[in-house]
Image (cartoon, rainbow, N blue to C red):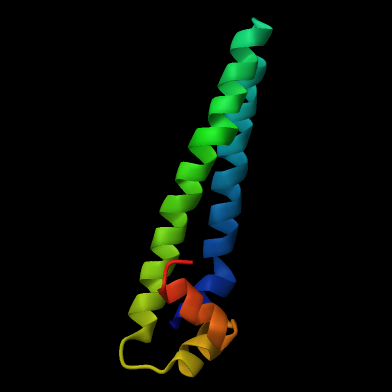
Length: 96
């Protein structure tokens, strides 16, 4: 089984299900906070601190994956594999 076959099948579906479940749990938790001030602060914590931390961690995983693909390949070959432009692949490798 190739990487693309794996991606095309179950991985995106699993990630979507996990994300929907997670966000539903967060929304329920936030909605259950009775005090508006506490609810607002909790929502702000989630959007201003927790989400960016998750995005950074996922970006690091993506950069590492592109770095693995780069081993023994040109930027063009990597760009074809993942369907991105050569400049974008280069940016990802630089952590941008």
